[in-house]
Amino acid sequence: MIQPALFAIALFGSGSAFAWDTEPVTLTLTDQVPLMEGAAYETGYVPSGSPVMVNFALEADELARVSMSTLAGLVWPEAVTLVWEPQPQTGTLGLFGALSTVIYLKLDLWGYQGEWELDRRSIEVLANTVFDPLVLADSPTPEVHIEQEGLGTTAFTIGTTVLSVVDINLDVDLAATLDTTMAGVEIQHDDEVQRLEADVVVLDVPDTGYLEVTSTYMAAWDTSMQVLIQPGVEVCVDIIGCYEWDDIFDIPVDMGQASFDDAFDPVTYDFRLPVMAPPDESHDFGEVTVGELANWNVELRNGGVELLAGEAGITGSEYFSVYPDFILADADSYDGLVVTFAPQSPGPFNATLLLASNDPAHPTYSVELTGTGVEDVEESTTIPAEVGCGCSGGGRPLTGLWLLGLAPLLVRRRRAGA
Image (tube, rainbow, N blue to C red; front, side, top):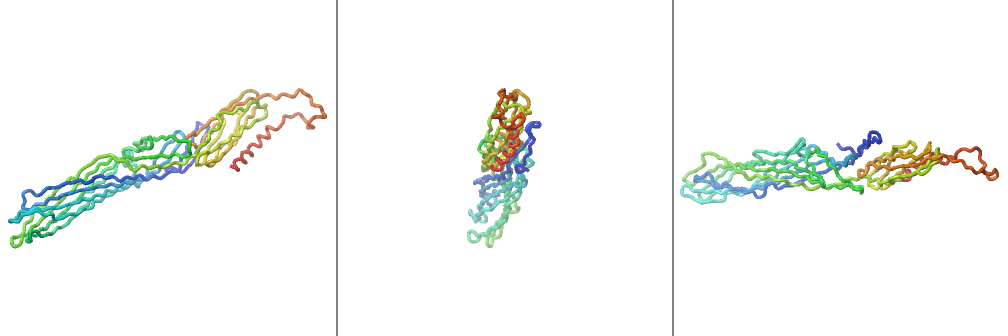
């Protein structure tokens, strides 16, 4: 499961081996799909050649409603990767069918003839199932299938009188079977296409503190509806007697089949991110007397909408150092570092200030540092006693060392006031 912003940093060891992630966002993917609209079928009069025949006119509509949930999050810094984690047993697929029937009777028995509409009605056909998303080709559940034979079975009896003396009784068993399969084809994340759960989806991140993503799930559908009709009839005429079919027979009806792709409703969501304003690309301390030091105050601004966190370190000459070695700034706030150059021997020196943070657009920055250590040159001019400083000894001024000791206090004060 994606954990909320757990930071594990191992900077300047074997490279920037740390990982960041965002708070997960819960997404619900939904679609309503017309699987069948106005599919019509007519049996014609059966059984052929019988003195009593029936004709069934059928019209079918079928709708599918599907929903499933997933967690979405970002992981970096190697690349800003979108991760979807499907939530088990959050998928539901429901089928809703309506079967309209009109029944006609044709009679040519004992001199009585005619054709009548006996019945008109609509029958609901329902089915549903629960499944695990994301239903892609490599998912544990690569497709969702509903097939329930006999679902929607309806038995009814129709009794009527025609021609004043002819009584007709019709018994009908009608069973509608829905057979539907849904399988995921792909997910379009902005300009990136995901076809497998294992696919790596890399996104471009703007320097705005927000990353908005629109994702559209595409599914393949295969659906059909079959109807089985079992009619039985009895016709009775006053005085003459009754006639009924010898056997109950089956009338199988294929209402149709369809295969197509359909896109779910698009989901748009965003991630809140930190943004570290870029520092100077380089800094030159100039000439610094050996044994003394010079400080450079580095101001780091978080222009994003989430906490900026990271680490700082130095590679190169040991005469350069940074304090503190971490970065922490609230949204739209500042943090600061003090970089110190304290040469212990003369000559030019260089190093690199490395900054690593949870800014996904720019997870690392480097600042080139240069400085030159120079020997202390004794003043050649003798200062008369009457205008001297009145101090004892000829030790080196302590101004630089005093500043080094004060640097941590200055940083703490700045952080406290941020």
